[in-house]
Length: 335
Length: 93
Image 1 (cartoon, each protein chain N blue to C red):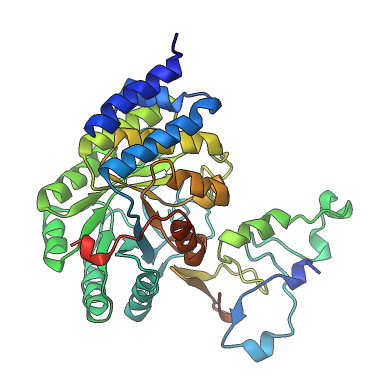
Image 2: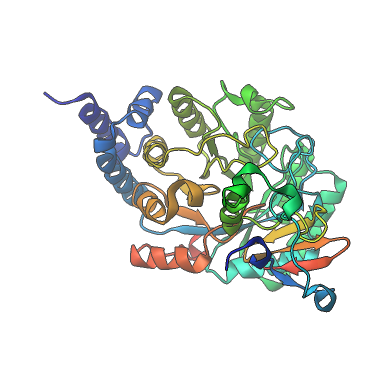
């Protein structure tokens, strides 16, 4: 007689692998609850789904903070909120440094460069900085430019489209039911409104979140299915890296086996989406776990440093991809 | 030698000559005092109270000036970081 977990993986195989359709919430939850001995099978299935519906290429991206710290919002995981006693100070990146960051990113073979700002939404100064920065990067670096500037107005969405922004990132961060425990200065639905406008504008949608904020497995499954309903082009998957001075500064790291279960579950919920390793993977999974995730559903990475913390060296990640015979997606394949 | 005064503080730029011989007095991650005045029970048993900070710094830029404990303005770039103390100048990875 098959066990419950056998049944969970059989359901996942029939749906995600054979039809490219994401799992329903109860089936995602079943994967998140798989016992440790079933984890290798779940990762193998997630890898097969990724290879079948996305292919072997890995999309490489670099990110940089154009405006760091001093944010008026209270996202409890974030060291850039001006409402906490975090040591992160407010600072702006000038245009030459922004271009240098794009150049460093392109040198890794990355096709995406995301300009990020710690704001509720962009003001006139930030939009001007973005306008000048995009023009300066375009003049010197051949790379897709993405942006992450918080909540947008319709006019700002239109301006980003006019600037040729390739993809817009705005994370929902966690399940709708858990969001009020993490952020009180705005709502999940306000974030969703921006995502809907971005989707309607024709820009690619990048929307993910952070695991390990205190959400339950049920809420993790809820989040995966809510993301699937949005049908984003990319889902960045972060694991909480507890930051000093924030309300979650003393929170525990996600157990690496739970992190890998989540990677498999999110891939099975989102068979055709770019699923990107983002912040926290180094301290949560280490080198071996990074490899396991790339063989368990992940098909994109942020290389180099993050916004306020440092990452693995790009050379290490690129060597790992080479070792796994996973080619880096070429810029020509993204246009 | 892995004592507090020997940690990697990054490259120092404008005031390099004047600061080269200075010993770090503060932890550049938490801003804690590295001198004897701040010794805790853990120190007295031989433990390093900033070993966790030292480990964390492998994946973090510095946040506090090691000479005056001012919070620095820090910019993280894809391939490095730079940090500026208004009193002691800029350092970078």
